[in-house]
Figure (tube, rainbow, N blue to C red):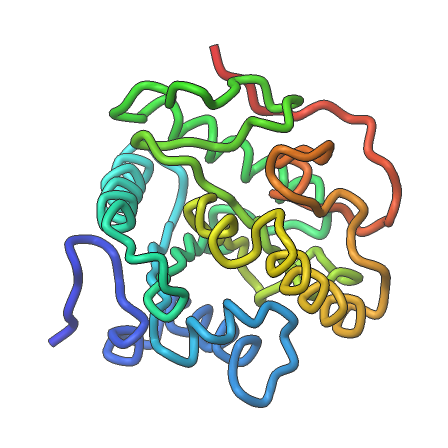
Length: 246
């Protein structure tokens, strides 16, 4: 019988699921992160190897589906409030959308869709915006928040032909981690710089291009929102974040 932690699906349960688009999406992800892959993010590969990935599969962004996502995110965040700061226990959340929900050849369409999802989930947030976190995405001290926790969102999609490290298969996928996790494993310090330099070196090899200019550290001159959905070109971005908080 499939074991489900409320509505979050554990990696170990995927093979027990019916052979639908959900399992096919997972198998594409597994191929990207598996031992034969040179995928650049060592933390993602480690999480896959240890069976730590958690999943939410979204058929659409209807009101009912977004309510389900709210429950899943709340559960994910509550569990991560007890995280012991060991990378060997860090569980990323992958929100995988069906191709019925979004399918396009244009990167901009996927990013627009992703920001619409974040706007919708913010409207369902059960907690107030955390004190000390800017609400303006143009601030280096802004990050997406939900249920009182700062998050980092990686938007991966099939429209990434150049930056293959942001392409996990045929589906739009939002990879969610507590933002503080990056402070612990790759923060703005000597050890963190070494870790990030290693990963970015691997990205350059995997993508066969220089890492995105907008990648940086929280609180530095870089803006978090530009790192959620990166662009193919290695150039300065002048556009404004489509996400606003009233």
